[in-house]
Length: 241
Image (cartoon, rainbow, N blue to C red):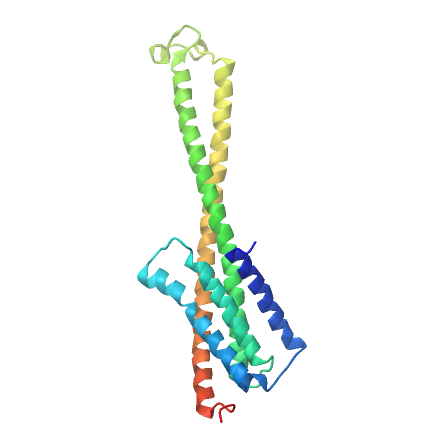
């Protein structure tokens, strides 16, 4: 039950509930308090830890036994949740509003992109497997059909020996006609799989562009977080003695 993907689903629901909390709760003092800053710091650190996944994938190009994307999603849900709690559901500055909006967009784009990309990847993988099986079956059918057509059933001679005869001399038996019909059916199925594979390839390319948008919004969020931290330190921590 408590698999990592299930935990991420619960965290996504928890984040959505926290965001909806802006409609019913506001605490203007919590964000600047010691517990509020503590949660904000932890949340920011976890958000920064989401960079581990793209760094390993794009820079180090490492592939471990465990999927690091699951940890990326976990950090990307817990961190923003803590930041929302840190805000106390009260946004008084422009940078706070921008951070909140970009935070929601990053999480939303990540969840949607992950769900759709996984679906497309799985469908494309299944299509490729079916495509390979159909291709093998068609190749076997072709060999069987060539073997069947190499005999002139009317005279018992090879077709190659009776090329000069009139076309009426060759009368394919019913079993050969059935074989041709099955072969044509498999060719149609093969063509449909080929079309579906091309469709999912284009869809996968589209979702790759979606992920790029996710990266751009994430970069904007990190820039805002840096500005927010600098301004907070500049104006001081009022809970310090």
